[in-house]
Length: 180
Image (tube, rainbow, N blue to C red; front, side, top):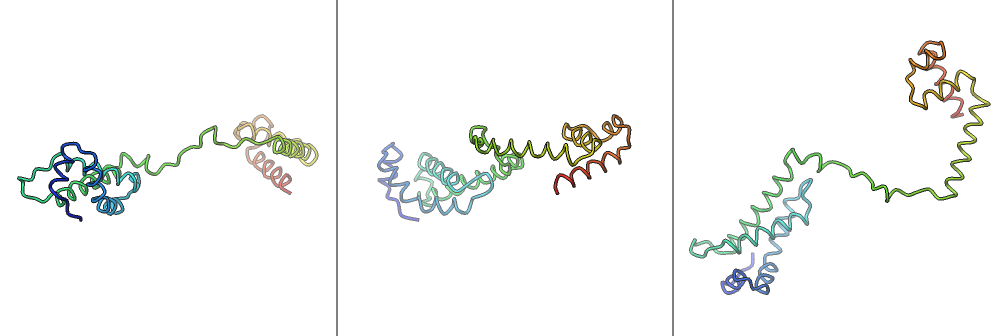
């Protein structure tokens, strides 16, 4: 860690932005090194750097030379503690849903199909309906339509007057025919 002269520290404590910027520049390698070691789910590198800067600001504000420790050592400890506290906070179990979740896409960011894609989809739908009419038996069509509407197999079986296993078999035949 680089030496920091007392004059620069006193000026930074009094609010001299130039002295504070010079202090930050001298301690930034230590802050970055600590940030690289503190990364965790929910605490990325940039956040850890920010926590280190907060630790440095606290060190500048609370440092008392009469305590006997050199400022560089005191600042390094404050930076390290601030980053470690942020890491511990990020790893708490209460933050796990946020740290390991996947964001849902915004409705605005979902690409909308163009006219060409809509026309192709419409043609495919019409072809599938035509194949359903020609290739499927009436029982298979009724079972498939009921299934597509989310109706349970037991209810479909009751309406069609067959067993639930008969509905499952009709659906399997319909899928096989439509895939082929």
